[in-house]
Amino acid sequence: MEAKEYYRFLLERYYNGSATAAEEEELFAALRTGTDEEEWTVMISELHAAAPADPAYNPVLYEQQVNSILQQDSPVRSRRPVIMRYAAAAAVALLVVAAGYFTWQRTSRKSTVPIVATADVKPGKNGAVLTLADGSEVVLDSLGNGTVTTQQGTRVILSNGQLSYDAAGTGEVSQNTMTTPRGRKFRLRLPDGTNVWLNAASAISYPTAFTGNTRSVTLTGEAYFEVTANKDQPFIVQLNNETSVRVLGTHFNIHAYPDENNISTTLLEGAVRVHVQQQTSLLKPGQQLEINKKSGATALNNQADTLAIIAWKNDILNFQDKKLTTVISMIARWYDIEVVYETTPPDITFVGEIGSDVNLSSVLNFLKESGVHFRLENRTLIIGK
Image 1: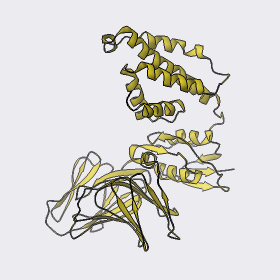
Image 2 (image 1 turned 120 degrees about the vertical axis):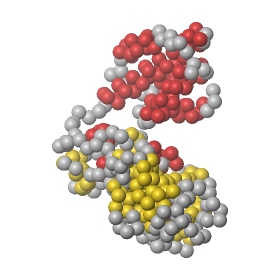
Image 3 (image 1 turned 135 degrees about the vertical axis):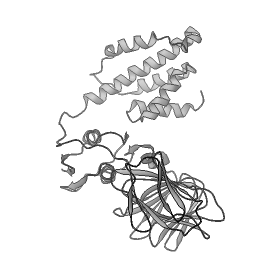
Image 4 (image 1 turned 45 degrees about the vertical axis):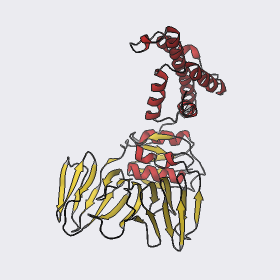
């Protein structure tokens, strides 16, 4: 079996309830291929055997599901030897039993205390405001595909939720700003072909054409960049008067919200130089540099969880290893709610993730299961003792 450890990783995430919809789909697609049945069965059996017992679990409840799976005989599977088809179905059946076991465990331990909420809150969506050089604003949320505006011969085009620039114009260069309010995120293709994903409550300013020796943009909030390589025109992200990120061509994430104490730059591919006051740090893929905005002190993480860091870009709210205040800030930005702390926030570190397309009530259930006490009044989340 190729990538055995990766599939074991997917199985473990499925078992503990943290697998995303895409990961579950990938896992079951691999199981349905009917190859390497013995290895699948061994991995699943090991995970199943290692799980802590729960006296409330009754495997008889899942026999009907197991039998129905074992009796399946799809056209694709019927072309494979019967014994191989049975082994593949058995592996899936065992996964169903185990999944039922873990679902039963989680359900049996859930709190029965209801969430106090006047109404549910829908998740954020794609949307942004484009501010042109003359100060006029264009709300992109409800516009259809086509030309948004033309500036000195440069067309601004909206296509399938992404804004891009036709750099064919030769007129005067203008400065534009894309802003995502809370509860919105958007994609942008800069005039040089660089792709930018802008998270909620963020803003990026940039020219309608890159001229001169550098390509410079200014960012507040969070964005993921896939920079078009150009060794003769380095790409620079200016974060404040003392901090900037300089690249040639690379993939990286910047987290720089004004209301937070730290700025972080995480590199996924290529190389970047982070300039902080008089210091310069060269990052390698998988590294994250965190900067304290007040002191300028830096901390380098050599093994950053890059998938977790860019989860927001992939429509996931990732809470893994994050403190309560960080998680609450993420929720507030995405669901556009206010937060009030009635007491000092408890020292809780979270695990897991949830899709960003769910209503707020689903996320609040996640918090409640983690021991957080709160109430929701209109669009204000009140964190209690």
